[in-house]
Amino acid sequence: MRPDRAVSTNAATKGLPLATALKDAALSALVAFGLFFFLIGLHTNQGPTGALVVTTRFEQLALLVGAVFVGSFARTLLFGRSPISFGLPSALSANVQHLGRFAGPALLIFALLVPVLFYHNRYLLDLGILVLTYVMLGWGLNIVVGLAGLLDLGYVAFYAVGAYSYALLAQNFELSFWICLPLAGILAAFWGILLGFPVLRLRGDYLAIVTLAFGEIIRLVLINWQSFTGGPNGIASIPRPSFFGLPFVDDESGFAAFFGLEFSATHRVVFLFYLILALALLTNWVTIRLRRLPVGRAWEAMREDEIACRSLGINTTNTKLTAFAMGAMFAGIGGAFFATRQGFISPESFTFGESALVLAIVVLGGMGSQLGVAIAAFVMLGGFELLREFEQYRMLVFGCAMVAIMIWRPRGLIATREPSLYLAEPKRTA
Image (cartoon, rainbow, N blue to C red):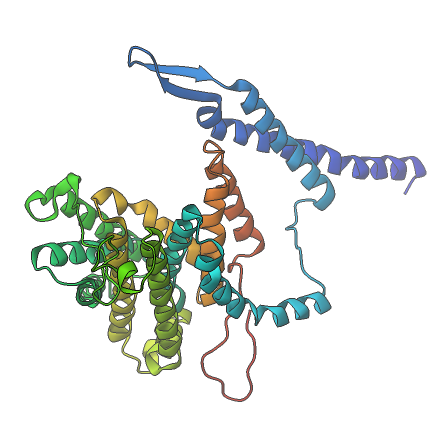
């Protein structure tokens, strides 16, 4: 090769990454402009006359598009177009796995101490109750999605069935919370079985569409059956739970007077916190026990390969129905707790967004991982509260974080899945 031609070839090769980075950055900025023009660039408000007024925020839009341009340019220039891996060194990875064994007990101890540490902070207590509620819902959905491999987008329907079952039974038949709680779970499990029959032969996207339709059907029934569910007005004055017959009221028959304590409204909040903590731990214990039983191993086998599972003689019909029933039962119990905690329920509390949030908790935490679901619920619900002041941008930050996790941790925060039965020695599978 001639020397001058070699020099020109090397120069062209050196100039290629810069040109590629500029091209990718410009394309990313163009896409960001198209996505954020109506979300960030234009803002609607109600004017003094009641008419809709559109204002522009082009400065913020320009800053956002510029940040995307710079980020894409730096990414292509430093890493090229290949995937970015952030693998940990082997020694550090071993230490992280060793410390991971203590994560579950540490979280449990912290949860037990939350009412003691933050007794006078009602906001944090309510936030803790909310997080534990979604932890329980995530563990219930983890049976259907994480263990059985059935994509359920209508999980909020069972949540609504449990809430309305408790509210109607407690008001019309004057049953106590402790009687209505298992009844709500049983009714929700019954509806889970009813959902399971039409979807026995469905998989993948078709299963997701049918379960999504089921969730919307339940919500529309709650809205339109006004004589039974109250319609859009919902159900109010739902009875509160008591501590073994002792109500949390300021009189001689109340909880505080019985134990000789000064009455405080925080007593009921602390009781609700420990109640949902006990329900969540019960869900976790039952799930772990079921996973080690033949039905749990059948769920995992169906998740990995349904055809191979069927060829081994496993009854996939019963396997799917049990997965839907168990997951729905825990959702119904969680719905009953939600109803008694709020004292008021309406169809607005059971929209598709709730199903999407619980599903995101399961997927981001790691399907099949109990600890991962708990951590994901804590991070997501806590992250929402931390970004509450940035109401216009918190969904944007949340979405970017989800995309980043799905790129770098496609199987969730805790991606390892340990089999429930070993032939020789335990082996960790990624």
